[in-house]
Length: 256
Image 1 (cartoon, rainbow, N blue to C red):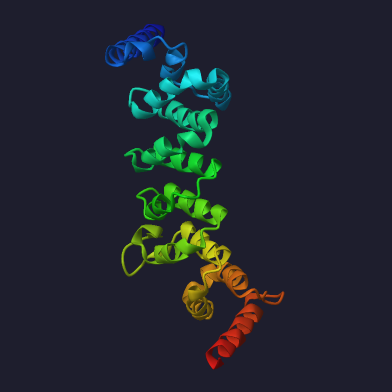
Image 2: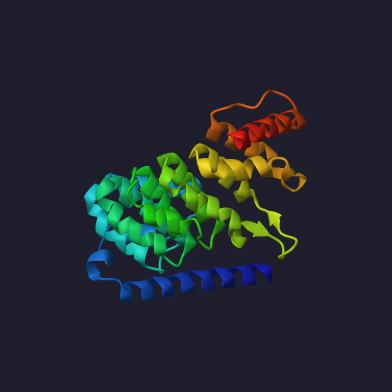
């Protein structure tokens, strides 16, 4: 009986795949259907090795793969992981020429494609899309916001530091209800990025924050950021020693 059920499930699974494949072929342009990698991009892969194999086969085709890749990126008929591979492969094959197309996908409804396009733009050293990176700092998906932070940090886009600082006031970066909100892990990244960008206007607020108990969970990050912004390293030792040092620095700043 169990064997019969298993066989039935396998038959149904095969039939379902066939139906999906048939449905896809009916909607896809003939030149895409005839592409040698079209069946490969329709398949679902479970292992990284299989996905790496798909990527390698794609890259080997170079320009011949481009029409298929752009179609895969735009179509829901293909597995998400394959669309992820298609996004990076397009950037790798076309280089910076792919940037305008990739930039459009930073507004895609699927967060995975927003993330893939953002990471691909970073790998292509596309510093000019500052408006996109700013917008993605408030993306619905935290992983996309984190990647936007990383991109701004890697490109050292100091002019975007005020927008990074504004993330501290975005409710999406906290958990819990209003009045009992908890700082998420992303807050640590925001504070450190502020330091890396050397955002001077954040110096006074951070000097005040590091003295308060309610910010003790991010005191380490505040110490890092203050050291980066001011160019002064706090002394070795425990938190009390560091707090005392920054309090002294704060008094010096007030007296200026």
